[in-house]
Image 1 (cartoon, rainbow, N blue to C red):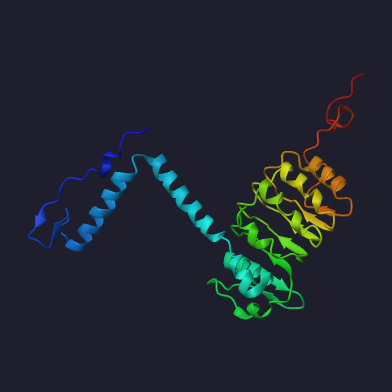
Image 2: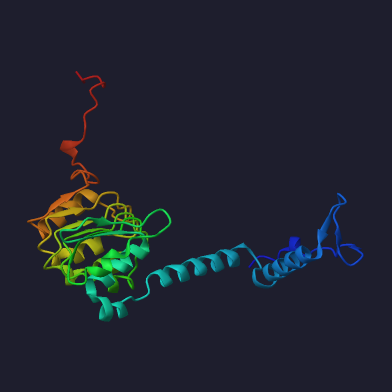
Length: 256
């Protein structure tokens, strides 16, 4: 581990009476600000001995926020029913929901949304757009309340991984459209878990960086889900050409 930050060891400032301290330029910092600076520097000195420790702290802090966003809202099911409880979780995440025969409900740029969905206790949610949301494995408990969900978009969700896909089987009877485009943690192993979803009619697996061979993966998924249109991948992408299929160099001279 690196040595403690020497730069955080400050030289005691010269006091200007009892109201503040002198800077090199002659300006005076109020005593209250002096205490705030001293407290912050003391906190940093005591807790972060090097850059790695600071990065670890920030990472843990970010994960705590994600965990809080994915806390269980199943307690709302008793008061408002499973559809409204599941919709509330998606809307709090910044996503959008569509109840059957209703218009889409989306939060505004401030995260506010209409409370009218609480009146749809008996109306199933048929579509969810959770693109760019921070849903993780734990948060799926709230999503799986929507037993009649037909369309689900998880595009670019940073915490959706293979384990998450293994939990989608309760939606097998209803789910017809699923988008995983741009999910950085979804690999071939997770896609293999979708074999339960035999009612899928459309699956988007474009831009999955963890998939090592997109072309072959698409072929295997199409065999696994024969009634599903798999989109987003060129079937030849990642496939190695045989010797007879290698492009010929037409510029080379033909041997006599």
